[in-house]
Image (tube, rainbow, N blue to C red; front, side, top):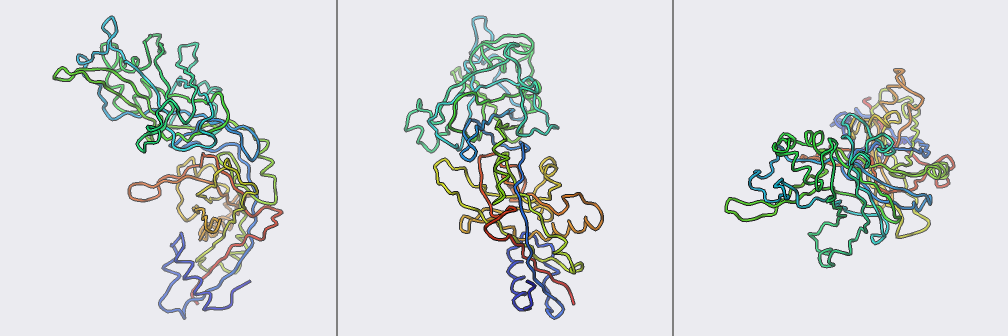
Length: 481
């Protein structure tokens, strides 16, 4: 298995380095004087197994809503989410004396108030009748709390009870809203949404009553009603003093789950401009990346455990879920190479195609993260991103039906160093492969790595009883003579 040909090995290191994720050793691996450099190659076996997880950290800026039957397990999966709302810095309503939306007593009111749940994609049938409930939170979500996908806001007392005046509105809907003209629905500028009216009388936590929720918001601004513009100075003040947030719960129906791109709270009122013309004003607060949004899933886990127990393959299944655990032959790779540089350590995961094709098959995970097993929770809780030293990304290739980790050499070296130093656990040579969603900042730098909370699943070649062939990791070493 050990490569003997210098020429072929040198070509291999050039190719591997060209497509490497990690170039930390590039300067030391190439030299103008090849007579001083010794190259070696080797191949080792990697073992894998499925790792069932009951929950994942919910820290995405998109949310999910609906209930479906998992085509792989036959069990129901329901998605609900909590959201807060963002406001512009130092937001201002129109001057009090310009408002003409008033009640019989002359007090200002909102003419209407609503929540719009905008969705970007869905799984299932968009014409299936569904029902959701919009519930007011009793208090804001906390920035210092890690909310996992199995978090139950009702059990934790986070929902304001309807018996205490908490706002709770039920909404029957289909994702494809047939009440909207077809020409409008097919217009590229139209954003498909679920509209929930909040126009029923509302009682706040202090016992004050309003004709609708929008009126409550407006009066929290104007000093005449005991409000203050400082309540709208920023999102933190808005959340703590006016709108703690809402819980959107899927309560009935079976057949679709929507990916929610934006939840927007709108209120409408009329006012006069300087020339005395009447205008309709709109104030909107949106659930954006500046505030917290957390999806929680309710699903049975018995069938998940059965899938994970299939030793003829391994699974990647989101959101919660099955990951693939990898045992790396660290000691074998490093044996007799203590002073060598690992220029490349590459392995490929081959996807197994579904036996039965269906229009409701789950999506294929598109991006994978590999991290040490001991970092399974801390990586996400610490808001880490792939550093290509101890954590790496791989993208799905539809051409080859594979995921390729081009070079995890530095992870292997770190594992070996920790083992020698006695800083290890029983999982010291294990890594976990996790489906993730990534994003980049304006400078095109990787800025966010979070769990994939969508419905996705695939099988991989591997497992203790793997019938498809070995998983191999190819290693290239170099050292100065």
